[in-house]
Image (cartoon, rainbow, N blue to C red; front, side, top):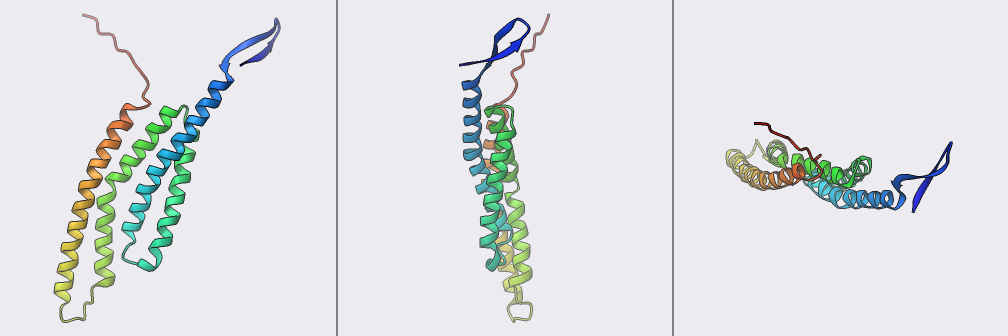
Length: 171
């Protein structure tokens, strides 16, 4: 169904198809829901890992962070020019959050050592060494997983939704 525009010569069909606009909006909503879910999961993992040393607060903070990141993902998708651009922005944002995973593990290690290691204990050195070794393992694992997830999201994000440009080379 075509929309009509009033002009001096009468009604003329407008080039924009209303059903195509509705379809594009639906595709942006789907991109916001699915891509925003990926973004929300990664954001919640970052928040919960960062604040895991205080377990009485981290559960609610993780849930709130999940909802906030999901709303941000939906808003980013709806404000994009097209569904492909929405996916591009969401995947690049997910790549950034994936690359931040080892930093959250390092912050967790520091806060765990500051709050959970008993410095007055006879075995304070062993507690600190164990926390440092465990934190190093967690940081290494998060770095490994975060790096590969980040690379996948980055490559897909850079390939999806880009403007097609043709370059002519003259000899």
